Image 1 (cartoon, one colour):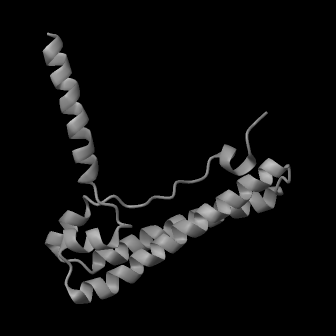
Image 2 (cartoon, rainbow, N blue to C red):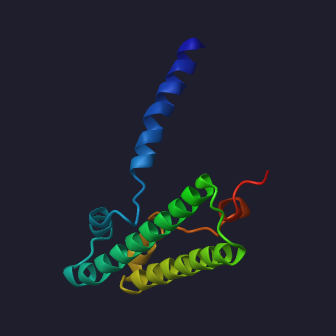
Length: 136
């Protein structure tokens, strides 16, 4: 019985990293190119779109980091500024979705099926805690 439990645990330890490695992120340009077997024309059109998505994600991360830093210093942004941050996040999220659709438009039917298996970045709406700080 003990050996079976140990075998199951070892099996899980080996399976989890293998399945995690098989996931491809849209942000890994070279892996995406290889996985979808993109031709040179597709790569020339899709790689800049992936770079645009990366830029949007970096911008979003910087905006939230700046906002959190202000909260930590006790410099609470005004209500309308917080609403602006939320609307900006929603806009960036929509931009990413549009860019992902643009990528899909450059793929053939077989590649579109494979594209569905790729992890795509998602910007969820900001929660009240993220916008307004922690409730006390």
